[in-house]
Length: 506
Image (spheres, rainbow, N blue to C red):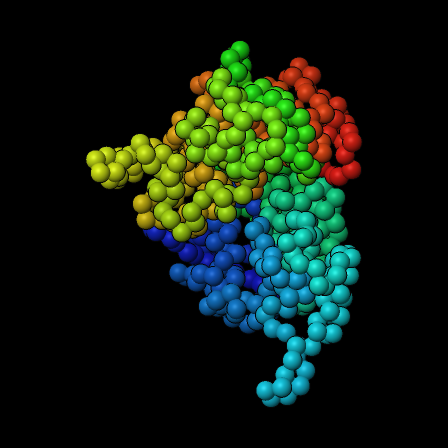
């Protein structure tokens, strides 16, 4: 096969920490290269080197037989290298066609009398949408699309670019099972057309399913680079973390108490949730499962006070509330790990220490409301160390420079510092590798053991069954089932999730 891209001894460091060390890989025409590793292993930095976002300290790249040294993402785009990121780079206030042609529109006329050739724009957009199986109008605004449809629009952009190399970074984290299968069909078709693809994912079974070759990184180094047939999930995990993991979930070290920390009584909001009643007890991990669009996230936002509800009441530590706010929830020692860490969980341009201390700032205030910076940094450092955060100097390094998994650890650390008794976690392990997941699970167990109650929302039924004391199932904004640990059965829980529902599992 003809090599499309080859990296030779690429090395890059940030804040004195080596992110990529002497990495040499290649991907050829008609090949899907699976790239895996723990958060902070160097995958994103390697892709940023290829994309011209950062430049290497040493090493070189060869693309299409020529030396390749991009100085900016525009250089990668000009070389026909397409990136499809986990956080999609679409302008939601623009149409599908406008997003696809954002780099430059075809025009008609000459000189100062040039106009956008909208007929060509629509026709060409229609062609690439057909190629990815999207039966949508080119004039539809992107904010009306589902996550899966937006992902396919990104691939349509790559087809319009006629990319020779397509890099997909965690493309399935927001997709349903059916949308993921459709994405894989398109990827295989692109491979058969001679495209080279790099697929990055923490879902190891998916990597085994789709990749021809697998490259594994650990601590910035390439530790394996072999045909996919040489791997199974256990070997992949062992190479990723440097040791074997005997179990995916830590043993639960406590059982729920009788005291009710949080109670929802008849919470309703028209078209969103209807008559939700549930109790979260001291030391309990309560799972919430359901289809995409079942109302899980919306319910969590109402409980925390981010969104309003029309009727019902929330009881926090015995105090009934007809209305709550985020500030009141924080004062009641409630925490909320949002599923959207980049937009809602972090201040991306601010340093790690200040992000961790954000919720707890009042406790570091002294006379004249001046912040005791030394105590703040000491407390933030302790929280970061407890979560084994991989970073440089937390007072200097911004949150945006961390890997996705380490960003999630900063979000969790921020709330742990406030010592919550009620912890709402919405998809806390999305986009996180198996090693980091185990650490998050261990934190959940420790919270429960210390007497906190954890409301654990997840699309992964397996992790709910592995961690929860009880699972409630939502569908179309209502609770359609409740299961204790002794009753956990995948088939029964799925049947409850599909009751009255028409979607597919998230």
